[in-house]
Image: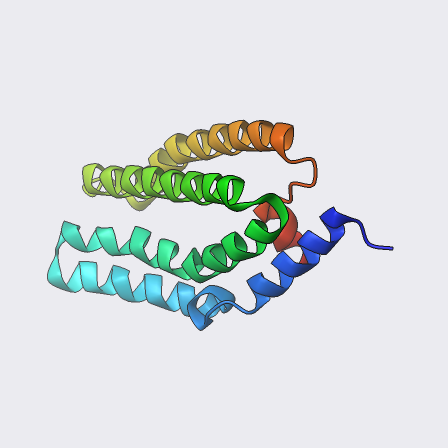
Amino acid sequence: MRTARDERLHELTLAYMEKDLLGTKWLWTVLLLMGIGILMTLFDSVLLTLLFPVAFLGSNLRYQVKKRQILESYVGEELATTYWRFWFVQNVVLSVTFAILLILTVDLSFWQIWGTILIILIPIYVVSEWWFKRRIRRDDPDFVSDQEVYKNV
């Protein structure tokens, strides 16, 4: 017998597997990011760094829309909207931070750029995920995180 949590995990896993080509095929995402890097080098434009966050957001958007629809049937529109807003704000903050750091560190070596980015972005991500999970688990005992969905795929 399936619990509500298992059923939700199953539906979210199916939704994740059905998402678009950019999101499901990591190779296409890597090729897209390499293409952006080549364009940045060819045109010597720092503004092209803004395409990195757009590619990441775009690769996950279809899944997040489907996830919101699934969650509305389980937790209601209000809580599903809260999930959606948090995801959106978190990704915008991370993307803007990433773009700003990339622009500010463009003159450093490759390892210094990525070291700086990781040292700043990882704590922001970990703290925001911890806070969100703690808050949502209080309101929704059957909460399923995106990490659990990714592991289930």
